[in-house]
Image 1 (cartoon, rainbow, N blue to C red):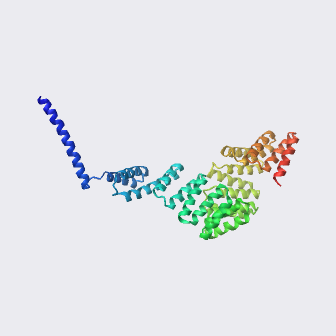
Image 2: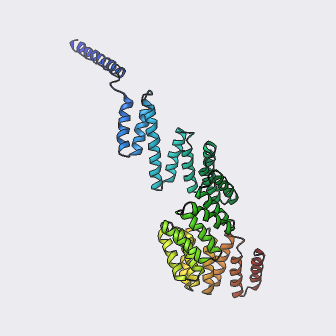
Image 3: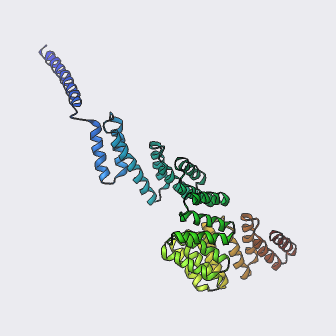
Length: 382
């Protein structure tokens, strides 16, 4: 009996103590002595100072759940900074889609912040998600009518292959800000792709007058000079681009192409090799060096380079055409026909592809196909 009374008393005591602690906790909370949100805010601050953005975001979001409004502005401010810096770090590490997730979150938090749309649009454009990028730049234009947004949207249209829209957007940007060098350069680049080389040169010259350190303007103007066979000016512009920023391989590609036009083959090969060292994943660098080796009559190296180009970018007709030409000079005519056929499948309007295949057919005695291909080449060149 005594045991039962003792056990009952102990149970009652535990119930009473639990009630006392619950009441005490409520009193302390009411007095503001302990705020669960503050605990997570403090954790977030620790991680924030240490640049541990992910942990800071977790802590601040937990604080946000528990907060009754006391720390709301402070938490929101910290979260936007954390998402922004984490997105930046993701981009540095090449994790583009995680960065985009953070930009999505930032836009959700600040739907009227034009800078968030601009940054996300820039990232979309960089990974060739052009329609999504254009949508974001549309929003920036709607919110700000920014000339930079028109220029950036124009650049995206150019990358998408819509040069007329690119020119229209850059012209609008120039109307809003006549000193926006990037707008002249982007418009010049669009004119270049429309094969209006004189207008491309004029726009890039204007861009350089405004900003003499704009690498892309020298590159585009240099490429236009090279197409116009003004190789010395092309070399001068490409050299200037390299001096300003030696990291992109584009300057070396343009200068190497100009050296190739001047038949200074060893300098061309040296420049293409430098471009490859900078970015070994870019097929065009191997293809153009393959052309230089072809001109130098080093056919095995030409084949090696263009084979590498095809491995990187199997959808580029140029690699097949150059390799096929090298095989022709090595008298491997069936390989010529195979490569030229692949090139034609990729680029059906390639007159040069039909010509080299026609020559290969003629060499193996298939005169009917040789004539058909030659006629097709002639038709395409009209």
